[in-house]
Length: 393
Image 1 (cartoon, rainbow, N blue to C red):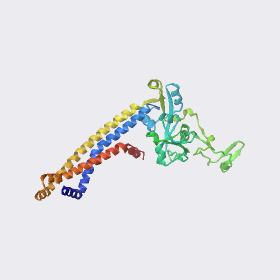
Image 2: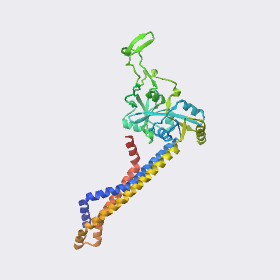
Image 3: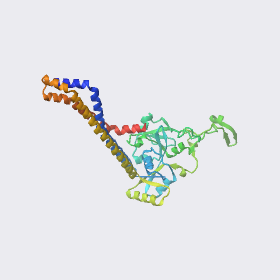
Image 4: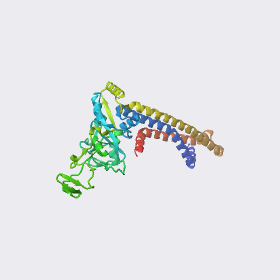
């Protein structure tokens, strides 16, 4: 038996490159279909779970899919926005409590979500550090944002400009981090939450000015005529809201006309939801109400169809790989015909010769099965997290 193991080991060592290629090929074609199935199922479960938590979304006319994905994941922008006064109209129906969302901007690729404090309660988000945003310009980070940007309470996060050639003078806003959320294992982990008015400041709808009566601003004053002060072009909007300049910030125009991306209507029960849907579908023009579950289910139907085609393609590749592997094994056995004759001449039994010849096949299949099993377990455990990281980067 020891002699048999020794000869088998020497054969494997001598032909390790050929066996390694076979092992990799068989491992991949046996792992990929299960991996794709697992990741698609996990994705579908997460999408449906988020949609079930947020059954209704109200937004401007346009693509229901973009509205649903934007409101649930903050990754797409609606083609049009709503006026803030729509929030009051939703609550006046008596069917739902309305939570606004404004997710136009980002900071280093992480969406900045302007909303109300009710959103934290609605999503059951808990704080790992700090507190909710209470003042204009304060920010609360999701767990993944804090880790990715290496930020803590007391640090600052700066919004990214939409256009580096912005001639309107809308400067990036430097926001103090006042809170960090515990991991929620949801899209909220990748978001930065601010007050709704803070997102309007980022958009340039509100700003503050320097106090030109102070000594520090003397170099920026052209002339004074009574209470009127004429400043030079160096006076610009603040890009940081501090206790010293907070009172100087103001908004242009009527706040009720300022934009929001979507509204999350939180209904009391299914009856209230049905009445709200009927009201918006029959009486309200220029606005749409979307059932998140229906939109996400239609998206998943497409995903599942694509998945099936991919798996069929991989199955065809698996058949071709199996045929090639069989051909390699048969050619290997034919090349080893002299080896079998020599073993028989020195007294090896037919069973020993069979086991020695089968070592190549057994080794490839056994190692491939072990590797494939490990990859499948790793995919089920970490595949979704790795995929999200790749998409975020």
